[in-house]
Image (tube, rainbow, N blue to C red; front, top):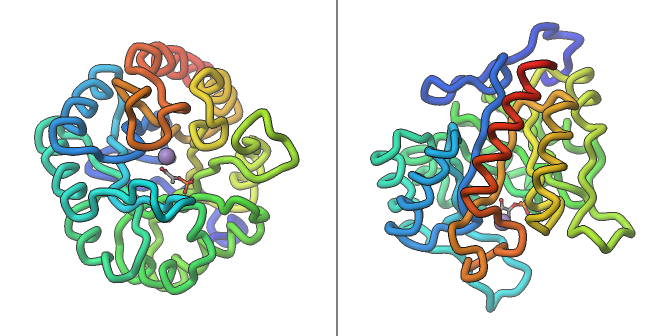
Length: 263
Ligand code: PEP
Ligand code: MN
């Protein structure tokens, strides 16, 4: 179902009137974690003014330590809905467990499957039984074939709305949090008909690298970017080191859209 051989034309996924995989690149931005209604509505307005098309924010967080902030849960989802109401930006958030599926189907516009759950086959099948667009992140140490088969799990249950998202993989390198694999863009485009967006934030782990990686991804043919933006990164509840301030994000969006025009 994912294979381009049996579906030669590009799939375009419509999310509240915004097309992913079409001519225009899609810019998704927002904090790693929703920290409250005031924070998420404020950042939503900021990223919208910078030119973002959609808002991201985690309400259920997959943290390495069980003692780290785990997300606001339902309260965070409600805060995202308020931010959407105020800005009109569709919302993207990570689903970690099948038990929260109904909450996500009712409230979010794109369900994110995080890197750590790329091969959680029960979760893949569950989102596959809905029609919600699914942002399928590549696992920390998964091959492209495994990633494609994860997308096949979702599609085989009847959901055609799958978007690949590369977010860096584990390598021997320690200067970056992960290694961004941009070769996946032409490979996914050759092998599949589905859109692919790039998450330079979790790949780099360092805000200083985000612009270069983003522009490279657009030049390589990515259908969009998902980037962590926070207006006070030093105090962010998670992933502050890799979060861009809105001013920096605004200039990235402008440069990125210029590159997209010429490729
Ligand atoms: C995130 O988007 O905040 C996140 C945890 O991403 P990943 O699953 O790629 O680590
Ligand atoms: Mn994050």
